[in-house]
Image (cartoon, rainbow, N blue to C red; front, side, top):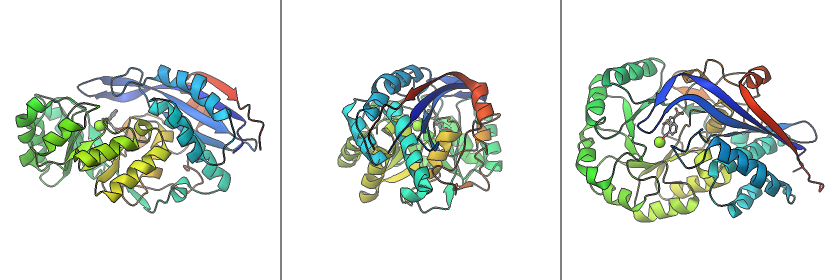
Length: 373
Ligand code: OSB
Ligand code: MG
């Protein structure tokens, strides 16, 4: 693949209203849009989903920027390649920094698909015409969370995820369940509990949650395995699954029944597709997680979610859930609980240049020094 230049756009956009978890309140979303251009002017798009501070994982916008500029772009330019999968593999030589790797790797997949004139969903083997959409209710008062959920259900979302933490859990789940006896509900703890909290987590079992997401340590697989033996609600891992090797270990240990796959957290498509394959072969359910992202990453999430195994609604929401105006020309819209897959080539979205430049804080272009064919 011949690449002429790579541009990093550091953007910042206020959320319509703050998104609250027990770890962080996100008011403004910073991110990095990666644009990879070939000599014919075709552009592939990626998005760095690290936050401004390391509250979710260890990466930040600044560490991602550094990795992209000083390590990953030079590594990409160091020798020729023919397929984006080779870059996913090449980046394995760099420790960690999954979100930085993913930002560039997903742009290369998009470029590659656009060069062939093929939708990326088709290239990765996707079959779903409609991607199943769920939405997240941030932490807040019980009444506030009920209201948020009511609004989202009215908008058609098929599944609601509640952010919980110790002391803000049983009462919330109980109340939501009584308002919505048949709704598909799940709870995400973002690692707020430890094994000592097992009785509190057992108390959630009676409310028929679809799953509980990442109750324990972000790097833990053993305690999750022990906890799963004590609770009937299936455990879904988020933060703990970064590499295919983590996935193999989780399968070996029976640490979870479900995995939330996020392209950013796992370092891009090459890793995500491998994790997906391992899950399929071992009876682990999967769905696509969200990162309060802009339209580029939303379109990548839709792409990934066209794979047959993504049979549980993901954190797939309309651009308008968080943004007054997204950075893509046509915002992502959930209708009747689904988003239709995008039929254009690559990820099927284009940048709204005017909106992008209005929210760009800084941008820098790197010519590709690749001389080879
Ligand atoms: O844990 O899944 C998570 C948002 C930011 C970081 C981590 C998580 C989340 C969400 C919201 O739960 C998902 C979304 O609507 O984008
Ligand atoms: Mg989560």
